[in-house]
Image (cartoon, rainbow, N blue to C red):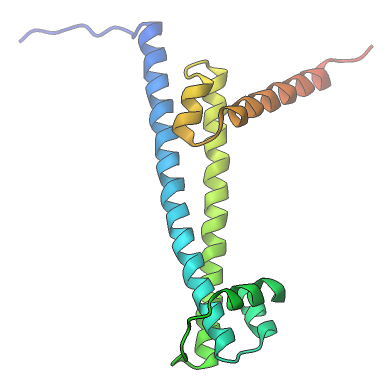
Length: 171
């Protein structure tokens, strides 16, 4: 048996490993955000169908809007957009219950999506600060525009300058 000494990694190897971890993290966030967006789209379509069907079945627009957590004008416009609906075979109470559940699911997924976007922005800023990844690559991988990535970097620099100025003791 022979032993191979594995010393410390060189700074270049450490930087490459950090870069790869950042890349994988950003791509994982992008994939998670994409799957949530797909699910949100499907749930919103289903919710809109329920809204339209409830309105066409004669449930008051105000009641439907309250169950869907939206304004009466929004509910009315969704109901008017679907003209080819037949009579529904559910009771108004069960339709409103379904509508309320769909609205809650949409809200939860929207909150989770915002949270993931915030975490992805932080990871992107870390990548920019360490200069491991450049702005065009980050924009392509994260789904942000190059302008958005540059704007995030500028905000981070301004925040750091503000913090440093606050820490400097005044005479």
